[in-house]
Image (cartoon, rainbow, N blue to C red):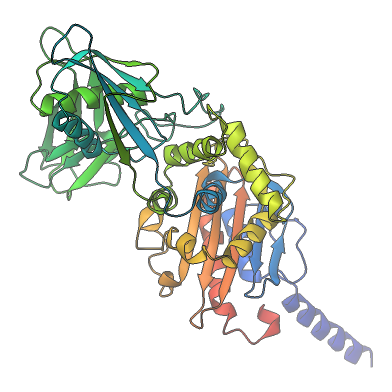
Length: 485
């Protein structure tokens, strides 16, 4: 009898151990937590207290809740709030306006005073700038007297990023938004494949190439990072120019180098002079900040692409300067001029409250997530995404999110997943932070909402947790065993 009781105790102990999920260290775990996710966290060396995950089923039913009310740094998933509220407030077809004004210069026959007023179009291209000047020429503006005046009063002079943000030299993330900029204030250099010269530069600035292709170099993942693009002001020997330095492997395919060697206002000035010269004018006018009039003898307006196009740039490619510009535009269109990030953040808070979305822990600094101050809980981010799913703008918004293995920031991620076309996701990354949020569309058209936020010194290892979460959700629609849920 004693032996029988002992055997029963052993069997019960074994069954109980199979039902208890694997523990990641000594962290508390919620009942029903999927073992594959816990195992992934354990293998990544990330404590469960450093992870927040919320998964909502098609009807909004919570399927996973881990630390859902912890306010965590969002990184780039903050762009989801900024872009959606902008779509709602301004409309998908809203267009930003850039105005050119010209008045005859007193006592100087054939000479004009030229003025440009910025309207917050972050995506104004060099070609757009050339076309504005060409239209001015068609209305008689054939010579400029003095400076070109640029009016940036739509935005306040924004403060720099908060401390602790790691930025690479010449990188695009730290650029300050201005009301009038060219090409997101970035420079693009087309790098050819073997045996060809540099194909071009956008904007059309003077480029001195001091690089060479080397047959002996391997095409490693960091080859683009080793190239440098510097700005050299004009001197007695040359006019202002960009200089491309370094070596790149001849075996590498064509690529585009994106850098920010100039501050936004400097790049605009260089671009204006380059465009004026391209139109055949020898005079290289200085560019200064000032006030444009409300009326002039020549008045030309350029309208941007629709807002929905900008939202795609922001979400698919995680364009920080465009997201920060959009937050300022939200404030400006609400009548807060000159616009400030604080006024833009207040506009988002007011929109949320007006739609019964109360997120008291939410903090917005610049709207891009490139901040250690911007925080939100995973519960409230999931609630927001679920609200978006029920709105008329959901198809437009979902289309702005990257598809794994296809485009944007996810072009090289999750590419082995056979269901990758069913995911629409936004990722985020800062030092010590890794986030993921978006939607999974089942084959029958049902929508799952997911948020995964990790704050840990080992956040770079959180990719395995994201993979495990996606796998769990994908299997959910075919999962009939409650013990595996």
